Length: 403
Image (cartoon, rainbow, N blue to C red):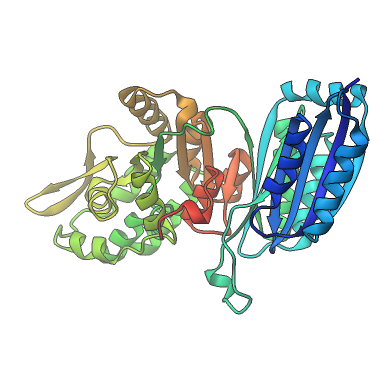
């Protein structure tokens, strides 16, 4: 009768270890039912679930593995596996899988403890834990670091409940925790749509225009109330634009050149372009500044509002349909159709209440450095890192990414 044995090998990593152990098993016609290997700080951990055929007794097989392990300076443990236990393991492969991504400048043990406690509370199994971020020197300033650990978990999950619990500890510990289904769409995202103001840039353009027009305080008050969801976007937008009446169009270029691009935006767009993604700006701001960023960052599409001018002077109106939350969601659908992809293959990123409609329909909706209302209603959020933290949510490691 075939014997099932879990072989666990640990020790200092060096070339040829896995080859040496598997070569011994090959001599006895052993079938490998499962195999996994990890390396942490030059220490190897290798696991092999072996099916030893009845014609080859397990004693000689395991003895040879033990001798080889000692020869290589490794520790080895053997654990018998019952057929019932193996069948239970096989049946688990049909369960839903999810990816939990923990992001921060540095990751403390408490964050790992709290995340895994929630996983255990909901009866999920952790299959793998991987560090996606690169190695960080001890003396490097925390403001320049990025840390990310990804958990692959399996089992039935109450997603809304788990997201709420993750958000609570994320706020408490100052980290970000994303929770996604691990399905084919996660690996085939093709379109990323960004809000502009306070997302791609660290400013609200209309506030910059208002300052130039001498109506900064009035416009800033209306902007904040709108972003918090206290005012209807279109009405508040029209009120703010009306206050710009009489502003010279000559100031627009200078404002565009001074706009601070958000941390990680250039690195993110550069990598998305290299990986074949399409990118878009869907903004309740203005086309003039969207086109400026499009050229600067290499973005494929821009949809925003057209600031009306007469004789080089702002009239206090916009032309065409205002790009509000509803319109952003429509544009996301239209771009998905244009690119021949499903909504599940899209990503939307924004910070304000008017971004929620597109965040809610995208395959991956991300509230970026967002207001509390938006963080609570979006499926995922990033607040601790720059925009390039999105690459971790897509499963990319630092070693995969262009600097």
